[in-house]
Length: 77
Ligand SMILES: [Zn+2]
Picture 1: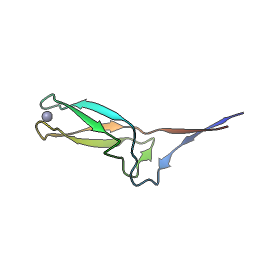
Picture 2: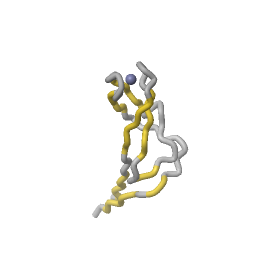
Picture 3: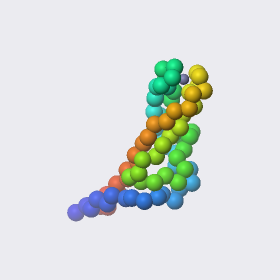
């Protein structure tokens, strides 16, 4: 019988690369900017706690942010 564990707390990972791309729209000029987590990693990410990602718009250099929540589950079989 398998058991599912939900993990929380800070991961002791200096650079956490994710195979994930996220498109967001600049609130100032409406340009779509792609944030590629495979090239711009999370630093010592904390699980189950909102992480702010600051984007610099490639069109107008406006800084804006979006938030992400990192969850991790482990199933032991
Ligand atoms: Zn912009």
